[in-house]
Length: 136
Image (cartoon, rainbow, N blue to C red; front, top):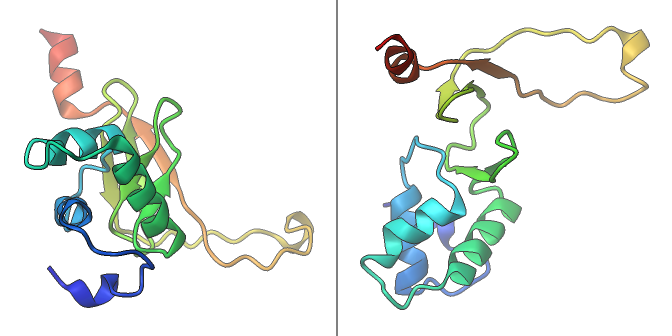
């Protein structure tokens, strides 16, 4: 794990926080705070949910993770901070990254004088696993 990108987060890198960072490194599952807590608390039984939540909040504030609010039932976290879009299964809520640049132009008449700096597109569908379950 590249520790240099975490040196300026603004908190002490305790073993529990390092476990959270290791869990997130390269993780493409878009886990919730609860999922992260359950995954790391096996190794660190003294881990508190507050530690997980506060660590994610600090990482999000510093731009080291993206906080996704695309699931109304729970926040998800994405360690991939590069510009990308998401595809969400409407049945199981699985989230998949889409690395494709869609050249969307907003007409000046609709911008309300905003300077647009980026966008995020959410696609919705049903994943193959959920489709297969419906057909059986």
